[in-house]
Structures are given as structure tokens and as C-alpha cells.
Length: 67
Image (cartoon, rainbow, N blue to C red; front, side):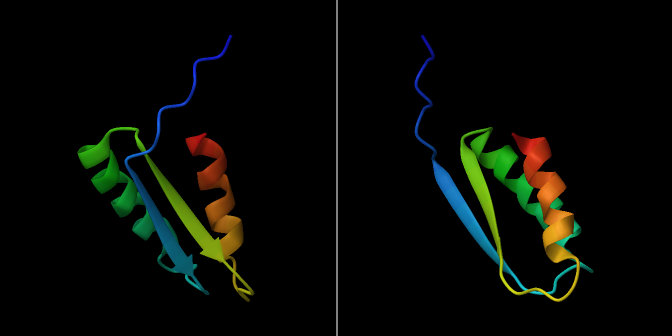
């Protein structure tokens, strides 16, 4: 039987609109800070909507690799 997932200590939601030039650096900085403070007990949510640049395509692999 699978163990239940413990509740998260913090959720950070980042709205991102046409941020392809800085989104990866921003995510890395937030991830380092969150991991330092909360270990693995956090979630980082990036919300992209109607971007006309490559922000969603840059964020998607980051989400897949953080599983």
C-alpha cells in the first residue's frame, strides 16, 4: 500500500506572462531558496496564460523534471 503524501508546508504561485528572457533564472532562484528553507516540502506553481512567447515551453520541462 502507498504511503500518504505529507501535507506541504508552502505553495508559491508565480504568474508569468511573456517572461521567456528571465523565467528560468527566476525559477532556479526560487527553487534554491525554497529547498534551503523547506527541503522538499513545498510546491512551486507557474501560471502562464495567453503568452505570445516561449514562456510555457520553457516552464514545462522544469515541471516534468521536478516530479
